[in-house]
Amino acid sequence: MRKINFYAGPAALPLPALERAQKELLDFEGTGMSVMEISHRAKEYDNVHNEAIALTKELLNIPDNYKILLLQGGGNLQFAMLPMNILWGGRKADYIVTGQWAKKAFKEAQIVAGENARCIASTESEQFSRLPRPDEIKVNDDATYVHICSNNTIYGTQWKNWPDTKGKPLAADMSSDFMWRPFDVKPFGFIYAGAQKNLGPSGLVVAIIRDDFLEMCSDKLPSMLQYKIHADKNSLFNTPPCFSIYILRNVLAYNKSIGGLEVIYKNNLKKGELLYGCIDKHSDFYRGFVKVKEDRSYMNVDFFLPNEELTTKFIDEAKKNNMVGLKGYRTLGGIRVSMYNAVTVENIETLVSFMEDFVKRNG
Image 1 (cartoon, one colour):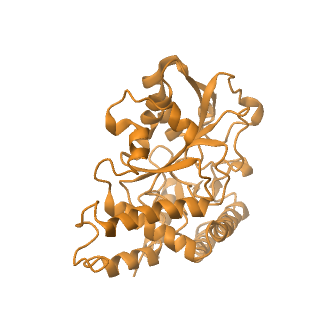
Image 2 (cartoon, one colour; image 1 turned 135 degrees about the horizontal axis):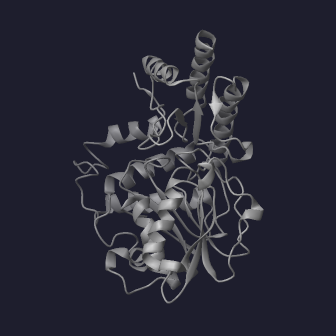
């Protein structure tokens, strides 16, 4: 029996995408080999590579003045690679710090660009339990971009409306909520997302870069660190993570088959309604971490039980009921429910039913 997987990443994948991989594992497209064994220059792999890019464009309705890059190194490399490519020649950027990964992105930008990377808003003093309010965000007139992390995986906040950047391009780490809903990419100069939470397995980053951003990129960096080279080579400058891209293709093809991001968005809203509804109903027992309701994440939900004994009991009993990955992040504790796209409404209904029973027996 497959587990109900609430891990924060690597995370659940849609079963049909995995079953397709299982069926094709030993003989991909009649090659007599798996997709992991054939050359990344072979036409069979080339078709997968280009389909993954095309599906990304289609599902998000991405205009022609953007390029899709399939990169390696995870979000952590992008924290440095973005400022290395853009913040040269005295350019400056503003960073909004709303969680651990946003903080790390800012730190890497400081290493690259020094004082030209500026934190313009942070909620760290409140343990990242909310997002900055609009009047707390002061974008500088000389900012080349404004960087955000769209979803706070650890602390459970999520931007539903993008901050007002005075027309400055946004750059965003969307690793933990990419494609959770449709959105307009046009305000963004650069988007990047590690695949291991909402798109596929680890080892792959999907990036979207606007042409004017690409033109600003430095050509004085080592080749593997230049966005221009990856764009010019269609992300085939070096051997790509072929299997990760293959699974990405499977996931995106499945997303399209069920009706695209509109259907996925409705499912995610329903999951949030169910889980937050239970937490709010029993707010004396399940204490949500994020207090500002409009800031609550639909991907990662944190809450606490009355004591550590009950927390351990909750995790252990959930595991016996086929649910795994509910232990909170080590710096926060409590319970964290990561309900990415592949987590179904039925999975959340099962969790909520368990929560209702648990509070009756222990409340």
